[in-house]
Structure formats: C-alpha cells, structure tokens
Amino acid sequence: MNKVITIDGPSASGKGTLAILLAERLNWKILDSGALYRAFAYFSISENDQKLIEQNLRKISFNIADNSIQVLFENEDISGHLRTEETAIQASKISSLPSTREILLPIQRFFSETSNLIADGRDMGSVVFPNANFKFFLDAAPEVRAKRRYLELQKRGQEVNMHDLINDIVERDKKDRTRELSPLIKTEDSILLDSTNLNQESILAEALQHIKERNIL
Ligand code: DC
Image (cartoon, rainbow, N blue to C red; front, side, top):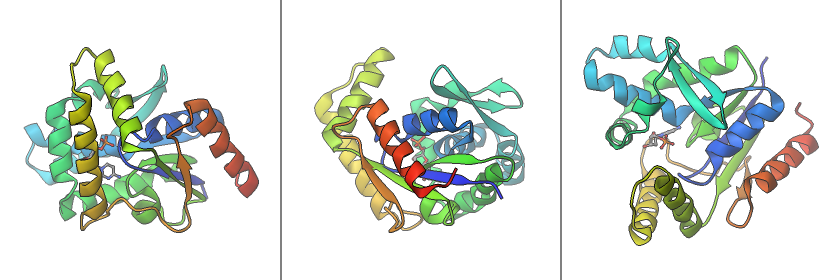
C-alpha cells in the first residue's frame, strides 16, 4: 500500500512549494490537483464530450523541473496553457460542479496507486485521501499571501495593485471555505503549518520534523 501525504490550504499559502520540496526530498510523486481542475477547464474549451475529457485527464502526469511543476499531456508540456487567466477563471467555475468533482475523484486517487504521493489541493485530506498517512494544512495571513502573489506576478511582468490583491484573496478564501461541495476546511487530524513568518526552508524543516515524529517513512 503506497503512502500519501496531503497538503491543503488557501491560495498562495505556499502549499505548492512545500509539495515540490517534500516530493523531491522524499523522492515521492506529486499530485497538483489544482492543475487537474485547470486541465479540465482547458480541455473543455475545445471539447464538449465529458467522456473524452475524462480520457484526456487520465493521460496527465506531473514532472518537477527547476523547482516548478510541469503538467504533461501525452508528453507535451501544457503548463503554460493552464496558467492563463482564462483557464483559471474557467477552472474556478467548473470546480463547483458536482459532475466535475465526481469525474476527478477516481483520477486523483489513481495517482497513489503507482507510487507514494504528495497531494496538494483544497480537499486532499478531507475528501480525496481521507485515510492519508499524514495531513498538513498550510496557512498564512492574507497580506503575506497577497505580497507573495504580487512578487510572482511582477516577475511575470504583470502590473498589479496590492490593495486589489488583498481584496481578491480575502474574497476567494470566503468562496473556497463556504462553498457547498468540498469546501476548504482544516480536518481535525491535520497539522497546521503557518507560513506567515517562515521562509520555505523553515516550513520544509517543520514539515519534515512532523513526518519524522510520526514515523511514517
Ligand atoms: O490551486 P489552483 O489555483 O491551481 O486551483 C485551480 C482551481 O481549482 C481553483 O479555482 C480551486 C479549484 N480546486 C478545487 O476546487 N479543489 C482542489 N483540490 C484543487 C483546486
């Protein structure tokens, strides 16, 4: 039976980075569930048939390169398509549909059948892998998360307003936490990591310490 560590949390909490660092350190596979929702949205732009979309989603794999996740579809890197604003907006819409979550549930679970897995998302510990060996919930103050997003967008050459970013993050949090289906929640059996005042290395060290104490490796 393969092992699973889940990392859930709001956007820009640093869970993606922690997932990459842990996957590299432990030499486990990674599941970026948000990328699957984005891929669903991306395929939906040119395809209506849910069966074909499902077949395409089953061909997706993840690869870590240069500290970021590449999303591969039949060996083609489609990460760039998934990062666009158009895909993000569409992904947010379809992620609240029961039919989308139903299709993605077994596809996400399948990732743990071939390898030990670090699963990153909003409902990894609560819905997709309720029996995970270890569950983290990563959080940080909205201002800090907005600052991270600001620097990220600036690096990509996009001009953004800090005040708008904080409002966006607070608004998205509210939506994520109060939606009816698979809301973002911290399960009772998960460990809270707060990255407000900690850098990536310190968060990784804290996570590894918890994993060591629980003796799951
Ligand atoms: O983390 P992200 O921005 O790549 O996620 C894309 C969208 O999918 C976002 O609107 C939240 C949603 N999502 C979800 O509903 N459940 C998950 N486990 C992961 C992402």
